[in-house]
Amino acid sequence: MNIRGIYKTSLIDYPGKISTVLFTGGCNLRCKYCHNPALACNLPGLELTPNDEAISFIEKRSGLIDGVTITGGEPTLSPNISEFLKKLKNRSIPVKLDSNGLNPSVIERLVGEGLLDYVAIDVKTSPEKYRELTGSDVDFGKIYRSVSILRDSGVDYEIRTTCIPGYVTVDDFYGIGGAIGRVSSYYLQQFRKDTPLLDESCMELSPYTRETLLGFREIVLGFADFCIIRGI
Image (cartoon, rainbow, N blue to C red; front, side):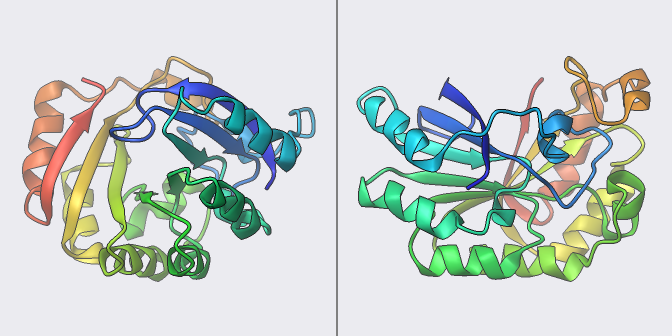
């Protein structure tokens, strides 16, 4: 995999587990609020960690962590992701994958090979607003397919949306619900601007109030078994 960063210990990235986080370079979206623009753009100045070195690092943390989170960027763009995850699974290490859901064939393969224990799919906004927010023409049917694969797989999963003001609204959550159908768990994430964002104009936005996020939650509960707000 194209590993461009390692976070030794995280208590928040893998629900219920202490994990090491591996960041992959490159993404097929350019979300305006992206907190990892260097990773998304796969800038050449980022240090590349050899895969075997990453595996060795994780092995040395045995007893300190109980899982690995693969995030990005967009990890499903890495051509050898299956081989890397097999090395983790051969060592009985639970794996969580963060993805934008635009590579359902990869997700289906990884699930079918038993290489994933938890998957988080980022649904950015309603289908109609994807280009405005991400700068890309997106086939939302691919995201729906990824969600459907997970819904039928038995693998633990979550859907999550960062609530960026103006780009994610009440109407957008109705649109998301209509597009993806019923899901088990949904997380709403507060918009943050404590690190440089890909689009600097987003730094001028004010995060939604707690009351607004609670209102979003009520809508999401119409198509999710439970919904939790992160970051408030």
